[in-house]
Length: 325
Image (cartoon, rainbow, N blue to C red; front, top):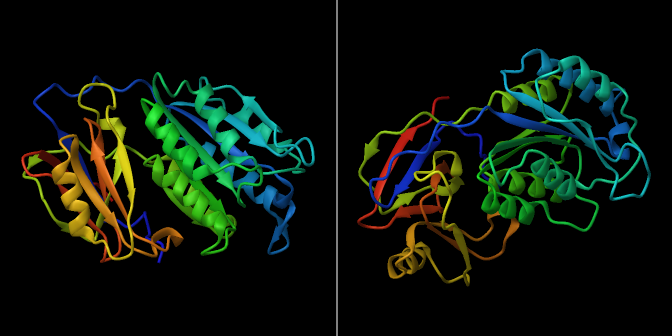
């Protein structure tokens, strides 16, 4: 079963190695809207082309934009069969709803779906290795250009100062490869994945991710060594030294290995500070996995299925607070 990453019972956790000061105040927010304008966007929902629905949904998002700089990128709108058909339509800068609206209105879906390259280019435009950066991706299908959005998410999360990709899956079939790819991209960057099936849901989804805010400031509490039903996700916006150090190591388990084995791996590794166990069947994987966490970056504790287990290594302090709904 695929966990619902939007369940309200989210917690925020930060691993504290010593007592350094908190990171400096974040820079003004910057975001890039990346729109799928591949050929499939001419598909219809209740007699209306999806590209027209997307234009209206973007209008709604722009009307309620919460502030900060916003740019626009699109792919698949100029040439058929070209995985390089990615274009920056509006550079990131002062918010200009009219300019973005005008560019979206001119999009004519034609080609491929180079999700990974488009998100990478968006991240680079946002200078994600130097400052906080957010990508909002709208896609109605899977990657069609021999790349892996899931792996890309992990790469950008590792290299970025504070990179997040929020993903809106528009008219995506439940349980499909496309859904798994898009969910993983969001998950690996600490972002939200929101499914949208029609015009109303697409507008709501775009508004939801546009308004996504960091979790509230945490209050110190004791660490939990065994937390059933939860997993941990990187959240670098709350770094304690201004830079995310360390990271996640994934251990591919055999089917007979358990959460206790995962905990033992972390306890035996001096660099490991926390861990979570992902059971067989999660995200279509037919074996379990153990994720060990090191460094000074924060992690989000996310409610999952009952067989998942997370934990914090003895002696490591934990900062945790429930996120606002």
